[in-house]
Amino acid sequence: MKKSFIAILCIFVFSCLAGAQEQAKELNLQKIADDLKFQNGMTFIRLEKFDKALEELQEYLEIFSRGIHRNEAYMHIGDIYFSRLEYHKAQRVYRSLYEEYSDSDDGVEAYYKVGLCYKKMGYRGRASEIFNEIVREHGGSSFASQAFLQIELIDILSE
Image (cartoon, rainbow, N blue to C red; front, side):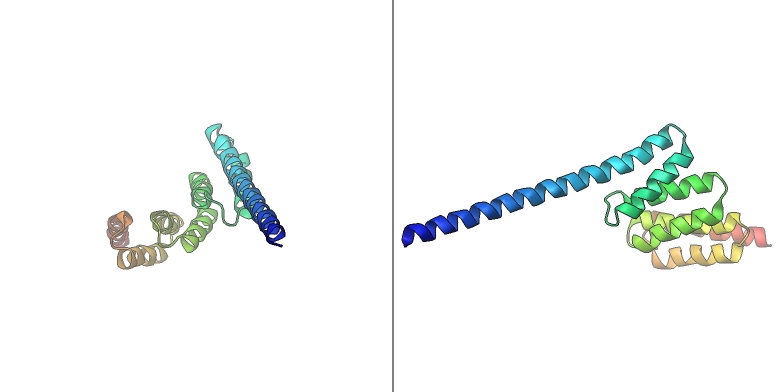
């Protein structure tokens, strides 16, 4: 009786260990897939193939809803649109980054860039609101001082 109990216990323990190893392998494969997909987008950026980079990074965001590079993917997509003077698209992407990572430096930077997009599009009032919110809500951030300077520039331009 004791031997059969020990045998059953050993089988149970070994099956648990095998299951844990399988889970670890699956998690590792997910991380590798996450990294590879993101790196594909980064490779296209380095090659200055920005349409392909946008395609890869947008697919990355769709596929990896909990990806480890989401904040970077958002930022690169927004930056590509910003450099193309597609400010409306850029501000939408930056806003998504801010909504997902509002308590991080990347999130505050993205929100600052939303303000820059509005300023570039000629919506100074909306840009000023965003910059004021950054100063108020994220005063400890490195972007608070930059936001304050943008507010002063908008005020000067409005005179």
